[in-house]
Length: 181
Image 1 (tube, rainbow, N blue to C red):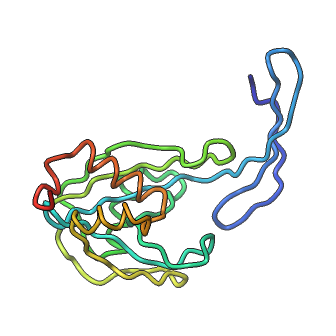
Image 2: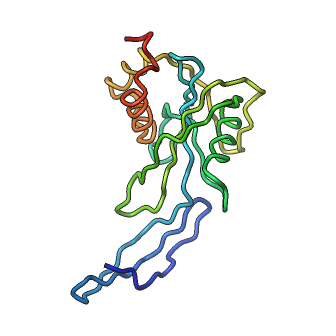
């Protein structure tokens, strides 16, 4: 299968909507609407071995406030690691001495080009106040692993990147959160 064409349908502030044409191996073609997105960096900020910094903010798509990991869009040509540092500082007021890329995911590859890069931030220092955009209303929430597990099991954390990031952390970084077990 190869992509043979693209027609832009909409240019927004955060993404572009395009209609792509594809040719299958048998020569037939079809079109598919794709949202083109610059990608994002997501940060799991470990305040201590047992505490994670989350943010609670209003999300238009869900039409409610969600508890989630700090994250933000990659700027044109920006390295995901630099984006992660910037978003951690802007949304929480913290900086990390250690920043490790854990994994990258496509949150909805059937119609979205966005790739999210999930980082673990450790050895945090509080360096100042949040530096929020005009359209952001972000509250910093510190939660221990025990409470995170309770909130995840109860379905109270519904943001996909947050569920993926915390699930990965709890599965593949078992030395973290041991105080809560």
